[in-house]
Image 1 (cartoon, rainbow, N blue to C red):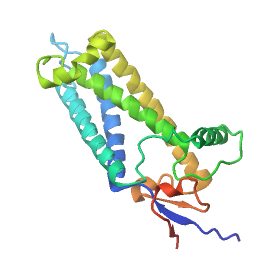
Image 2 (image 1 turned 45 degrees about the horizontal axis):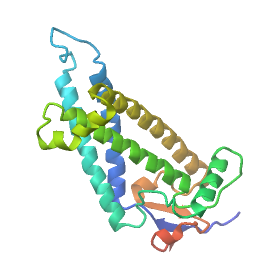
Image 3 (image 1 turned 60 degrees about the vertical axis):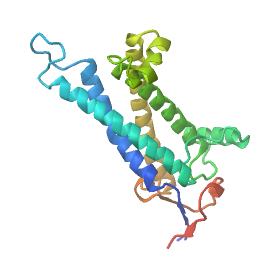
Length: 233
């Protein structure tokens, strides 16, 4: 029997893990309520916003989830400041980033048997940066629509320009809707890749969002970005 000696790397702070699970819950709630707001299930009476599911409640839940998500993202940024493992963006300014990204991508496309060990590989970092960009679009377009009725208030002044840039509220709504679907597609791919990594590499990819740690046999190429590891017992 081959004995494997793995090291424990503390990677994700409580701030990132809390943000992750709030984000998961918020995305599910926002997507479902957003679809209901876009196309209510049944319409009763003359008022188009009144349905058997009470559209006022649906919209309020959508707004509460949006504000909770924004608050959680601020927590995410704080975690990035205080913990080295809570990286926000890929290090595109480092030349080796591109060759390493290609190396990982070839492995995921089954064109290479393995890739170099990473705590968080560059392809994953790039995908998270794309997710944050989509989240930013959702925040801007969402608040632009939310504050349309108060153009002279501070919210309208901060986000009113989004409707102007996109060419009107209808286009803002369309962009908000399309990007929401792109985030759901990202989530599906993310779950697949996490489960795949957990099964094939057994480094604690899924459990790390609960424990904050990963278990690696080989020294990862980005080990210098986190605290020194401990020996697994």
